[in-house]
Length: 203
Image (cartoon, rainbow, N blue to C red):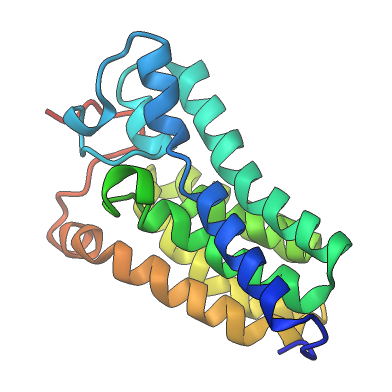
């Protein structure tokens, strides 16, 4: 845990602004803007990049992935530059809570995987790159996005210590637990062998 050096009022403001930024449902905005329909009625109903890909529009899925990652990364970087490391870690937590419980969608959100990876890249870029590589390798082998996310999240704490960022372990463990909670239904489908593959159009 970082030393608390920022005034409580500024930390509270950081948490609020990071949450609001994280809450922006880019997948929903992009699919509507491109005339792809309401993402919540497509495929799994999730608002993330994996479900956007089920529309068959790869550019839309890529844009969602980049923007969902960027909102976490931007929150962390701005907080770090403006206030310090304590604010950066708080921004990481609340920008990640945003896509999970977005105020704009009645607190019914997605899994937050892209935002999770974006916050890691901003907090500690070697750890973020290792987590992204873990996701990519797992996805290449299994073709299951949710399993890739779960493996990447589980390995993130390991990568922290490999790259000497152990001071962030409490935050990353909390984020990892939230990833697993949000993927509970996916875990059940993975066990049952019914989890859809990447790119599959789920009806």
